[in-house]
Amino acid sequence: MTVKYEACMIFSVAGGDESVAELKEKFAALIAENGTVENVDDWGKRKLAYLIDDEAEGYYVFTTFESAPEFPAELERVAGITEGVLRIMTTKK
Image (spheres, helix red, strand yellow):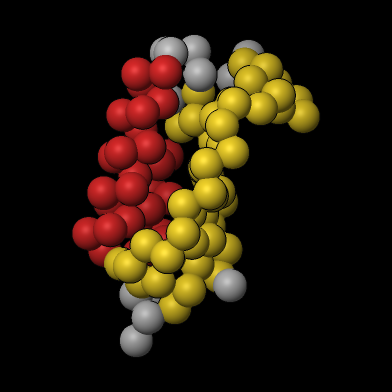
């Protein structure tokens, strides 16, 4: 059984465009391995509402996907230990 989810990821822009591209690729591959990607909405660099880790800007990516119910917890676990990820929020659609 698969369930639809949306993941909002905010990446640090402190490492430059190259590090953002690597993070986008890493998480796109992780989601594709464990589910079906329906849509990727790349918002780009935006000003944050408040400082996160002393950073005022972040790179926003929204991904809509279908996966097993266990996968979002793993996605958030991996994001939590990955350098350069400021925030992630996964919601069931």
